Length: 363
Image 1 (cartoon, rainbow, N blue to C red):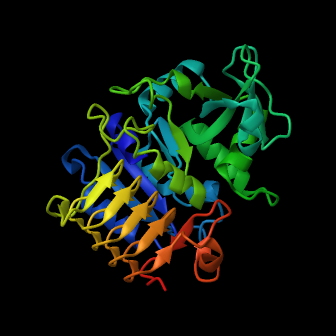
Image 2: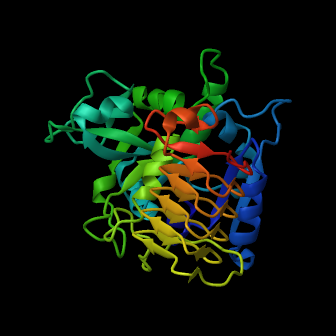
């Protein structure tokens, strides 16, 4: 999300955080340094409790409690983008469409098959395909896109507001006792009823360097399954999501580590392996291995996501798993081999993904 915004030339960014945000705060502080000389910033903003002793009650309330930032900066337009999606997008093109439409808010919409659209917030538009006439949360019968009867517009959770419209909508929502103070549930439907909402077709967005295979990629990573699947999208020979697009790079900062090392016949196929990782006499297949991981002789890792600092011992087998930061798998342990046994010890999703928590040692 941040890479898309910065690549598009927007360099005054506030990240609203709340619970257990230390690692994110540290990442932002150490990795996202933009030019303060030009007044640019990427700032982590925890709940300020400016409106009383309470945390954020919803995404709309988070912005309401942070309106002092809006008043100080006095922008004409505000981008409100969620942080739990993976995609490439040029937000500047969306801003241009917002200005042309004259709408109070523009919602990024992705075309999805109508048969699958019931899982999303869906937008019905008028004949022009732009003005939103209804915003429906997970409808049983999703409305079709004009001219495309088998598709529906699903909300991507990305919005561009004209500032005055956003402020007025937040203040009105704050006084609604029946509201849960959520952007998608309350603010956007209210502006839709007022005739002030437009949709931006994500399919028209042109990102420099995009390939036909990864053009239009978008995935919500709000569940363990979708988080896992997003990682699996990275490892094919021609990945669905391309990490190697240098015309629209994914910006970040990594520790000063040596390159990944493969010794004693260790190998990795159709995998992504981070710096500082040592694979010794082990085999890795179809996996995402972060930086600073150790995988010892005889171990086998397949179709898994392994986070920084993990140690996988000799002869261990890890399959269809997510291993969180600094977890460890001792010599000879098995994960993802016997799901019934795993369910008695670990978190196992309905799709059969085994999750080993942060700092946890497998049994």
